[in-house]
Amino acid sequence: QVQLVESGGGLVQAGGSLRLSCVASGSISSINVMGWYRQAPGKQRELVATITRTGPANYADSVKGRFTISRDSAKNTVYLQMNSLKPEDTAVYYCNLVDYIPAIRNYWGQGTQVTVSS
Image (tube, rainbow, N blue to C red; front, side, top):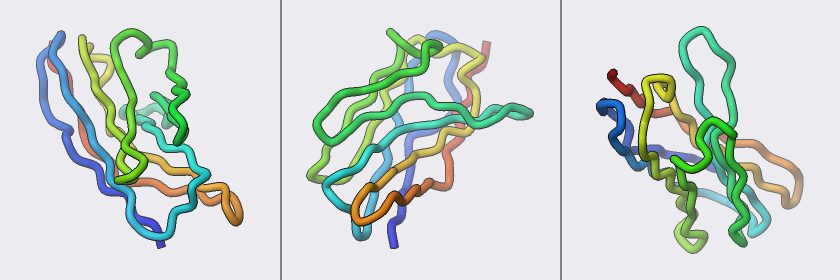
């Protein structure tokens, strides 16, 4: 069983920064992708950023240049540094892990609230 535990959410003023962390535990293969998604009230969950074990990252256009995803693969931990936050970044942020060996398995954290005030 794989568990994802997020931390680092909170309330911040527009223009401020937050750093989210997510630690994965359990049986995880070496072929996986970790990432962050978010869901605002009344909206669908959307991709924020993903990163492979070897490093290539993918970002939503809305966060490019402001957010940075990174990971410590040895610790099965993924981070999301969020700078220049905007009120429209307000959402519940979910950590995600997709493991490909021996079969594709998709895991989610419980979510952490990020609120950006104007």
